[in-house]
Length: 461
Image (cartoon, rainbow, N blue to C red; front, side, top):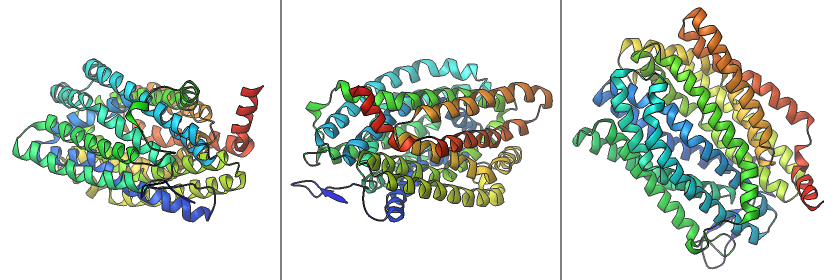
């Protein structure tokens, strides 16, 4: 169902009636294309830096990737709870709560942006040293990370506004803004690096300016909405009920993301121990892997919105059917992409670096992980369904247990024994498989469909 707000041309979509597969695909397709363009932010940096500045500069940018995720992931995870809240009340047709959820989300995310900027610019050099970042790339890594976090408010604001639009069933306009900002990023990368010779700092500056542009466009879209969904700058503030729900749904995801990111810091430290070429090769693979995750990301976002809206409207059958379709679609697309990457790994890695040793490291990682993307898709898909139902604690338990504790334990024990980077590569598919089994058992046995009703009864009782 489409909701046309009075006095505007804005159209939002309630996904509570109509063909399930068609709605999910139509919603996920713009997300997929949008994520594709968003991936160009980092990929363009890597391509231009790797080819115009050199493999050492590529390693400097690559070495910051895990740290960027570490400092952003907690706030992004908590903010993701707002999307569930907005989708729930939008599906339930409660406009007052939709308004309060939207404005509380913006207030919360703006506050976290300030914290993120301070933490990122202050702590990142020390963390890079603790990670064992190679000395020959340390100065460049610090430069890149500090410029990036100095403009992190644009990143946070864009993702906040995009999440709200998607919770309201609008996945098209975030796509348009991403296309614009991605093209802007390419142009600024060329200008700052090829023309002004600004090295890795220019790549970071191009990224944050592009993110600010997309954030402004998204916020403008929300400010021109109708009465039920329009954002007013004067109304941005905290509502106690909505803040409680945002934290309740989002805090487990934030803790999960941050601890996983911390575990990935340990993984990166193990990669760093094999030298600059290992860092460059794994960094090149990470850019390629980012594209492989796009179908997973698209369907998981669509699933969270679909499940949240339909459970808010008490359409339990639709929620269950949509969950099955979305998870299987993500698995199929991820495996197809993984097969292509497995086959084309040597050519794909060479697009980022021409160093033979770096190419070998990148191909080794691709050949270890690519055919197991189906497991990664299953874990993320099942997690998205449970988050849409307000059960964010279960994915948190799964990811912390397997993607953190088990992953780090394997590295601590096996790497000193075998002294091979193959151990670092294979730890990913092993832990993906374990988390998939755990989440599937819970999905099949638990009554996640009625979680909102039980929460309401508990609050009233």
